[in-house]
Length: 117
Image 1 (tube, rainbow, N blue to C red):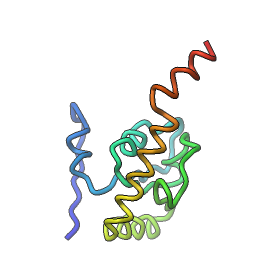
Image 2 (cartoon, rainbow, N blue to C red):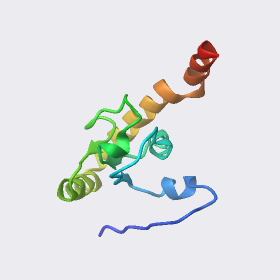
Image 3 (cartoon, rainbow, N blue to C red):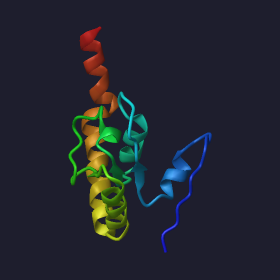
Image 4 (cartoon, helix red, strand yellow):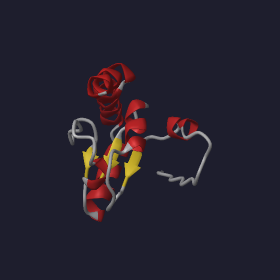
């Protein structure tokens, strides 16, 4: 069956994320870039998110890098779909990692910052 574990503050999220089948972002309010979402993508975790949860990362494409769902029913269905499709999880994980490397790797970010400064 499917099991869910919820943790509070931990000193290092990587061991927990490494054991996860997917990363879930059910945000309904907030703003800014989603660093935890980028961490999950960098670790090749497939993601299910609300549209709000994916805001701040304009390169994301639903169906390629993550599944987007905004109602409780569609969100639950997206999670179940992803958990039931190992190849989809692997493909989304690879696509997500590639996106982070192409747009958010330090080799990409530093020249942009230096150009502004």
